Image (cartoon, rainbow, N blue to C red; front, side):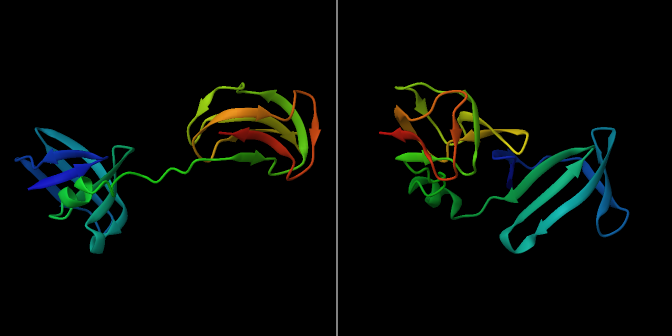
Length: 152
């Protein structure tokens, strides 16, 4: 039987034993070692579990017959959208501009550091693109919705 642990395909291993303490906690004996576990999330209908074993979280699911077809069709890849602009989500003062014109960004790339209500917020890209225009400089004060970047 094949399982997927933290996005990696893994074959079933022999010699493991589980002792249930209650419906949520268990002890796992494997290769002479004892591990303490907890069921964090049980999504049995979707063949998925989230387990915490010795303070480490594992996302586990049983491999399904449709998994290979879904992968061949490219439906297993997260959808990433191309961004055209990035506006200030709140009023504040620009502390640092973290990208320059021509930089390629991915979803999650830090773009700018903005101080709002005495807190520094790092604003990140929500998609992919190449920085075309930067509308602000460090020290500038911006209102909510003010254009900060344009992308191509």
